Image (tube, rainbow, N blue to C red; front, side, top):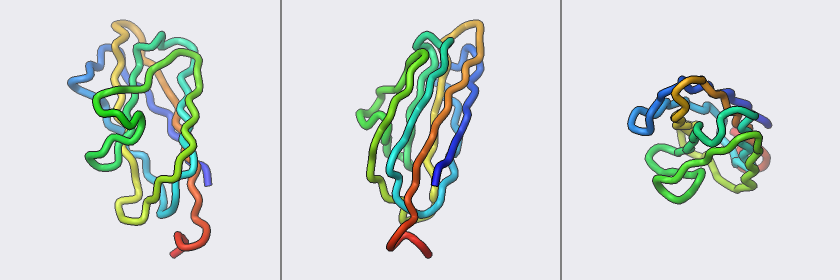
Length: 116
């Protein structure tokens, strides 16, 4: 299964007031996460992905993913076996003029023990 999320973050959104977007999923195993920064944000749009209070992407706390015209691919094996079946994306945009959008793709396997 593939889930897609587009997140637009307004200009002048500081890291102290991050935008939270809930990424609703299903019970299963995350097998890959892809983050796409289209041309334009010049490294000023930032992303962190959490599961509850634990930062997953990037795994090192207080760091973020940022870029311009780049695609980040994270092969993974992260199990979602307890509700809520979701992740939280936090974004901020240091650009003082333009809103910016990024896309997140999450591949999820529901085979085997994961099917209810």
